[in-house]
Length: 369
Image 1 (cartoon, helix red, strand yellow):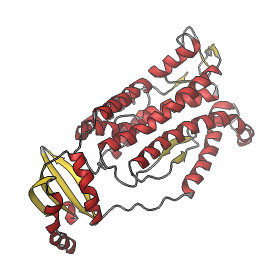
Image 2: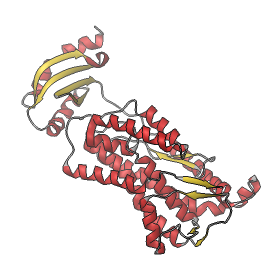
Image 3: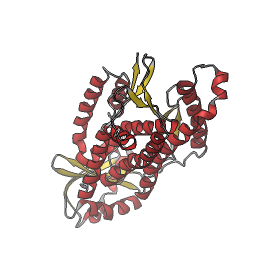
Image 4: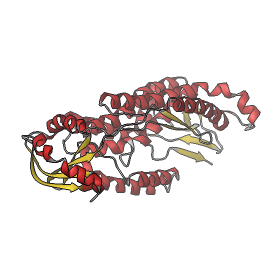
């Protein structure tokens, strides 16, 4: 028995009083979670969400973190020694990454899409051509992350500022943006809404940017010879093109020649769809976990299998399958992982998953030879 265990065990006299009228204790097991916690088995005497609201401040005041868990049909409370105290954000890092990402996106857009001569001098001379694309896509990416940020702050979850990721060797010049949760969401409802807020905010910006860009884009005959890249289609992308041009395209050898703003809107749909894949630590994975709980681990394997199959047609899906496999091996559950979400939250989750179906692109980019 460690010193920490003995102190924790000697401090259990208050536990029964704290849980009186809220949780009926059936057994108490000190030394759980490697000696850092006390495991309390029993059943709730009132609604679990209200129980957590009443109990969490009491335990926090004593320097402990309270977890609600379900093991089979049994309700389990873990009283963990210590409180998460997030370190201050490094304010200089997101600024530095933002500057590098802007330069990376300007460079990549001009290099990959604008000039036949890939020399450095030609790229630098033509950098201003990348401004419409860069500004448009950055607006979508930052809007997406700010959706997460403000929803997390609303639920008292500490997060970093948005971190843009420069990646100049990709066609977009970036791998998107991330924020990191530095504390644990209080419940599934918070996890769902934090996960859903980013993609919804991103789509609110991506759709009008795409419509504006398409209105600036000409429809022209496809090249008779190969050697060009076709962007992938999703149901929503096809419908928006139908709305803007009044017909289905591509058809009869005609297609839209994307304006930089339209290309950014399309890329915004692609990035949002990737985040909404309902698996692992992606936004869609958080939404699915909030909806169905631990059953989501079975969905992870289904999604990984489907991505491997899609990898036959686009090898990028193999990378995504590998990333989901690696990052789904561990999951930080909400503090209260027992209380169910509401009917309204279920509706939000279903809408978000339907949005994924509408914007998913099975073949994001295709090289026509």
